[in-house]
Every structure is written in structure tokens, then in C-alpha cells.
Amino acid sequence: MKKNRFLRWMLSALMAFSFIACQNEPLEGNFITDDGSNAGDFTATVNGEAFDATITSGQLNDGVLLLSGQDSSGNLIVLTISNVGECTFDLSLFSAFGSFIKVSDPGNGFVSSALLGGGGTATISAYDAENQTVTGTFSFVAVREVDDGSGGTTTETVVITEGVFNAIDFDVLSGSVQPNDCTIDDDTILNDPDDSFFANVDGTEFVDIEFAAEEILLGTEPLIKVTAVDSNGGQIQFFIPPNLGIGTFAFEPILNGAVLTGSYMAGDGSGTLTTGSGSITFTEFGFYTGKLAAQFSFTASDPLNNDPTIVEITEGEFNVDYLPSSGAVENSFSAFLDGVEYISTSITIQQSPFEGMTLVNLTTENADTNQSISLVFPIDIVAGDHEMAPFTVEGTESVGIVNPDIGNTPVLYKSNPGTLTITSYEYSTGVIEGVFTFTANDPLSNFPEVYQVTQGQFVIKI
Image 1: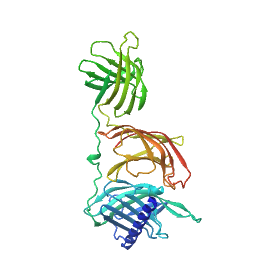
Image 2: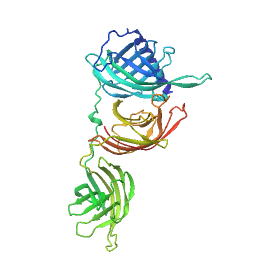
Image 3: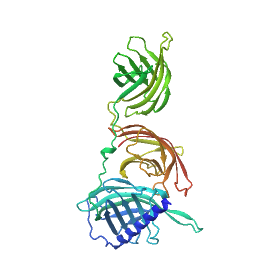
Image 4: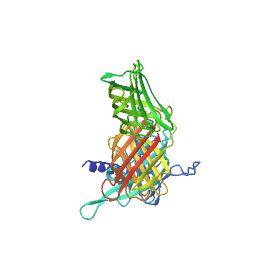
């Protein structure tokens, strides 16, 4: 019911806008810019065929931009964008969507809503509030429901690529002409936690006065050493292999090569006790950021059994960054698509507004196979596991998208189910590390293909 009401609203809005757009006169004149494109151009490729608008129209109503191009046959491409500004917009949403209206069937337009299995993006690269013009690019997959001839419905799809609108005039019907600020609001900027340490030793808090982490070499083996020191000179230490990653790991009792060990030494000059038993759980482990977040507990004892002392370390946790600088990273993305290695030849990272929040759109393409794998997630996502969904509804969802044949596929295949794990996120530098796996299928089950995305991993800087 909710989907039908939404689609009826969209189509009624499109019909109203279609009527307005058709009243506008064709653009006159030939305004040439330095790059050879014409001011007022609105072009695209629709199912492989060139679309060249002879009439364009733009209207701004309380921050919602309605932008259209109509070709010589009367077919329409319409973009509806809320919170307009120089941003990238996810066109699968209620607040931003693309549509295609055939002159032969104006009452049943194609819509890029995720509710129908569509999707896409539009980027406004230039918004001139003074002269009231807008420039940008777009591409989307749009879907409509039609009668299947047997009393039911089926879907039809249109694929629109290479969309360009250049210096399109728009009228302001109501509200301010000023654009939405697409920068991240201060309220959504998260701060990295300060280095911190806590543990109880036999039920008494170990109050650290020094806490640090560094990379060391044990022989030829690299390790991360984490040390907390109290006012009496007592120490709790950890030696952590740098390739461990997130998860729960058991301690080894003796430091022998690149193994995970911990130790406790009282400040009375007694010997060092090591992790006879116990474990540590890393909820964040950054190979590039250097950020570590962990909870731990262990029993400390003499590994040679010469000292009968046993100490219980409980309720332990720490946050620390062992790399002094981690902002200079190269974006990387890899996965396996149906068991075949997917090698990205391009990576695009964009931010788009959604209901007062900001989404990260990570889009990759393999030009050799003409395939694309994309991820969408909120910019304030935290380290840990996130179940993936096929749609962005609340703005908190993580979504995976597979386009198995760019420009030719009838539908975008969405994650259902799947898991995105943010292994580390350094907010100060914008470096994000993550892994993912998901099953991609048609959200409406109109197309039977299923794609498996496995062993996905990425490092990006936003």
C-alpha cells in the first residue's frame, strides 16, 4: 500500500510537470562554451539511442528542483531533486529521483525509485543562483509497472546513461534561490576518541599515568606494542601481530615470534606474569589508520611455573592510535563477483544529502568487463558489522549494488542479504577501511539472476 501511494504521488507530480514543461518555448540561440557544449543542452542515451532535448524547463519550489528535457518526439526526461545544491544525489530515493515519460503513454512514466528496483545518480556540478542556471550529469535505471495481459502486472525498464544538462535556466516558484550547503554539517562530524585505557587487577582499578602504542620489530617480526603504566611502575602490556584484524583472539603465554601475548608486572619489582589464559576482542583494527579498539580479560601467571602468583585482569578495554600519520592512502577496492576476481579500473567517492543526513556513495567500475559494484552507507557509520539492505529508507542503511552489464542491464541488483564490516574509520582524516559480502538480486523478484559478491575489501579517503 505504501509503495502504491508513493508511486501514485510521483506519477501525478510528473504529469503536472510534464504539462508545465510542454508549455515552454524551445530555447533559442546558440551559446557556445569553451568545452564545446551548448548552454541549454540536455542530452542522454536512452536504451542505447541518442536523446537530444529541443525543449528544456527548470523550476525551483521550496528547494525542490524539477528539471526536464523534451525531445522532438515529445518524450521527457525529468529529474526531481530535493535540497538542491552542488552535490551528488541518489536517484533511488523519495527525495530525489529520475523519470522517463513516453509521449505514447504519458500516464505511466518510468521512475528510478528503489521501490521498483531502479536507481542511479545525478551530480550538480554548477549552480548559479544569480543567473538561475544549473549544470550537471546523470544516469539512472527507471522502471514502470504495466498490465501483463493476464490480469496481473509486470515491469518494463529503461536505461538512461551519459546524461548531461548544461546551464539550464530555472524559475523560482517559491522559497529561496540559495543552494543547499552540501558540506558535512558539524553535527555529523564524529571525533576520534582520545587514547584511553582501563582494567581491573584482582578487582582493583589499574590507574594508568602513561599509555602508548608503537610498532616494533621482534627480530624480523613486526609487532604492535601497547603499554599502560601506573604510578607505582606497574605495567600491562600487549604484543599484537599487525595483520590480526577484528574479531576475538586467544592469548599465547610466551612471546615467541609474531604471536598475540599479554603481560602484567606489579610495581613491587616482582617478575613479569604472562597471559596464561584469556582473550581480546578487537572491534576496530586499522591497518592504515592505526586505530585499535579492544576489550580484554586474562589470567596472568608465570609461564615457567616458578612463581605461584596468579592475577586476574578483568573488564579491560582500550582505544589507541599507533600510527602518527595515516592520511596519505591510495583508494583501493577489490572483490569476487560470482567467484571471478573483480578488479576496479575506476573508483568514485561522492557524498549526497538524504533527509538531513549525508550518504557516502562508493562507486567502482571494471571497464574490462563492463561491470560495476557500488556501496552506499551513512557518513557517520561506526566500526563494526552492519547488515546490508536493498534500499536506503531511514538513511542508516548500508546498501550494495551490482550492475552486471553497464548501460544494458534491465535492473540494478541490490544487496539482500549481506554484511558490511567497517574495520576502521579515522574521522580526522576521512580514511575508511572495510570488508563486505552480499547476495545481489532484483528487489522485486522480476528478474531471476542472482549475483554473489564475496571477499570484498576497500580502503578509501573521503
